[in-house]
Length: 547
Image 1 (cartoon, one colour):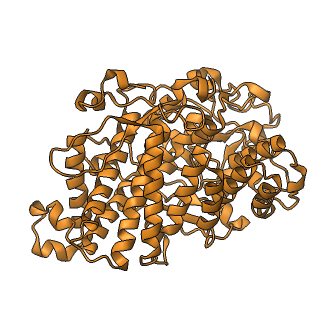
Image 2 (cartoon, helix red, strand yellow):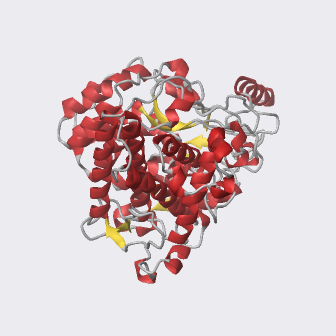
Image 3 (cartoon, helix red, strand yellow):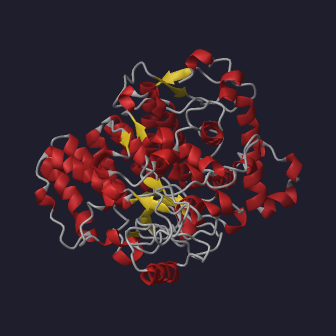
């Protein structure tokens, strides 16, 4: 791996500088750019960060050697969390980008598959670039002013973010395992020629490093220039709020409840809860008021059929969605009160127009919801006109329209949202409940619940069990499709059973192994396999280290 990371670091430096700084090119030929030049000033380090921002959503082959056109960073990794855990339901067969392999629990359990390999290398590439900034900026050779403080804060935040992603996928969950002895992932600090990976650190050691990194990031941000305000592109830059949000996630995942609650409150202060109009606008831009952090996707990046919205959005003009509308779990939908406007983005009465639908109810005559063909056709036309999918798109009962393109029916990519203030209310509520503070958890939930449901009454959830069930419900509805369910289930030690409690609407024939999975505490299939190429190349990790 680490030879590839060394090459990747230089490529990130080159991409960042050649794509962002014309003046630099006027004095430095593109084939002569070195890490020394790129790290020579705060301005050039900011260009490296811009390369990392871009790397979160670019097709991976544009960022480091050995990448693959089938993965475009977080366009893939974010919805994967709901795809693996069964929160976003597939309605028909469609195996583009191995997306259905993920649903069937094939890819992440295969050490030769693209999914674990590219995730591993993407996150370690990000760590190596962050290390380059941290090591140079803190060696005493540069003046540490407010601008450089903000840059170093971003680098430490990126490193913590990457380690959290790695340890949550490639190791057993902190709360369900034995973190002091469970193998985690290698910790990487160097960028110099000839460095090698360390062996796998324990889960506890990785968490200690993340906590140190995120606390250090916050200290640098406190003495740094604030993030610019303005258009959606500013939300791509990391700031103290992003760092506090990550601190809350780290603490929640390890059961450090007080830290999780405090950091969540700090992170959300300047991001008001969205209105109904904003919430129903499509989740396609980071300019939404709740968004703390996200990628402002550049149209010229040409992700198109590799984009988040290709995988999740039912208006995107690609075969993944035309043939396979994505649905909400019916059990979750049935819990949503009619007074909660979030219910409106799940179309329970959409006609089943796909004759190849996995439930065998596609086409008029098979759809049990319609006995009148004219009504069947009229409803399909109504929704197509309202939401903008094309005549080639199929519809299906319980399909979601939470995610809508700015230009529906096209292949235009849209922004990726990573962190919202609503998540922070939910983190605080869960953390307070886990500390036994039912009243505090209710108070934390009330602003969000009241904003979404005109008849909301949090007082009815007055036991630990009922309140925990309600928090799970709120996370399921509020954060649907935003990628949290995989790590939520690991933290809660919940398995997958699409047949339980009346059924999710998923087909066992279609879902195969993904239809039922035992809880992660007794089921190591939740842990991603370490890429075989890493085991083959890294002298410190052998076959016996495989998950």
